[in-house]
Length: 247
Image (cartoon, rainbow, N blue to C red; front, top):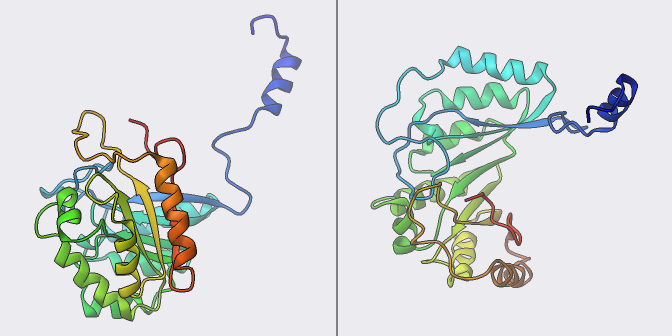
């Protein structure tokens, strides 16, 4: 307001909530540690590329980023991609980060091996989040052919995980009627939790597989499953009446 004097302006600024200040117990950073990915998910909101992306940060540069996060008061770090395990140094980066921050990692699990899981078991992670969107047909309809078996193999290896394993499932047209099957599969895989989100394709991309059910109906179903399977697995969701991502 051009009619405000300097004192009034300062008082107004002091009353404003800064949207970029850290929360009291420290901020959380989400880090796309690579843009390289071996999948081609139709609804991916990140800058992923199945073609090789070069000139990414070196291991030491990643360590420096982690140090800067700590120096600036961050306490939580989510590492995602792309597919993080494309990086051969990811376990080393996770180890370095977990000694300084609370860390979780998101993966499609397709590149996990017994040796990688063994190494991860030596690291204290908040969780390993694995994307699984239904049975083979449902999953591959949005994530691409030859992706389901590779993800399931990785999840089978993670049955030996000492870290919490959470499945993340995106609800879309092909799986919206089979959420209970996803919960049962997650239990069979000995995972600790399943969390549902909703599919919102990036701007300009096809919406042909977007769910047809309303959010309220889906939430009611998830709440039913949460109660039904409470002794076996944590069932959760991260959307409400508004889409998770803006179209």
